[in-house]
Image 1 (cartoon, rainbow, N blue to C red):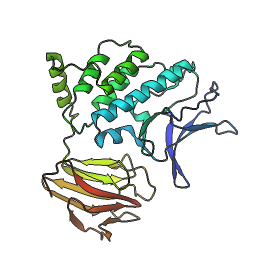
Image 2 (tube, one colour):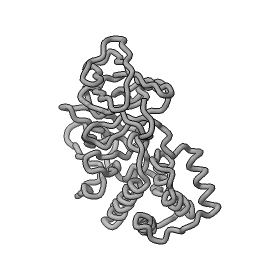
Image 3 (cartoon, rainbow, N blue to C red):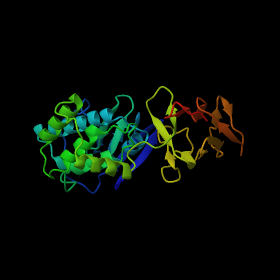
Image 4 (cartoon, rainbow, N blue to C red):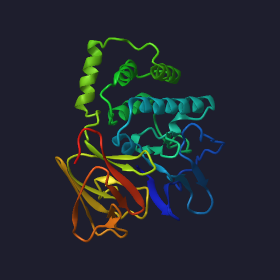
Length: 309
């Protein structure tokens, strides 16, 4: 994201935005903690004026969506986002201060809620388009079920007009979640939307995944070689939540029914069932095996309970 950078201090992650060249910084009481605003603080003293956002216990929206999501959970999170925007409207806060981009939304693993970036600088963004944002979120989601009747109806509703009122979106989402007014038969248009969803690979096709212990975070594993690490640039699967994970930490290989893992000379090592991997050692792993990456523990799981590795 332009003008933003990540920093780690005392083991905690932060997103920092330098505002030296900006003068119209908006102040005020912005208590959105119950609705979904990424918490931040303003540092306007000294030469380095900046906004600091907390990323503790948070993962990027794209990582969250790629890990697999239930239709109902997505609808509830979209509802919370719409309620956030309605609250902002009622408080007369400018919509153009919300960073409406999938890269600027985070998932709080503690509260199980989406949080959006708010930039308190006058006229920083030029537009506000919630319809495009919601459609982008939907099309980037990996759904765990093929039963997507509600999502299809939501897409149909959002595509009706580019100027849907926030209250209309909120009401429609509430009715979907409550099952109010859902048709019993699929129309031809809905069938076309189902095909569109399939073509964009919305349905979760990954057979295996790493499940983080004591968390709902899941990392789907498609066929091929995957580099896991803390570097977003150098890794296929980005793990930013711990500074004990190396920039490129390990390689995980998926070939049909065979999965194997090897450490890439990481500083804190890779462990399989509490045994540390050596040098260039490549170890075959099975469903139920525990994999420790730095200080993070995962279990290898499958979406298909009838199969085993």
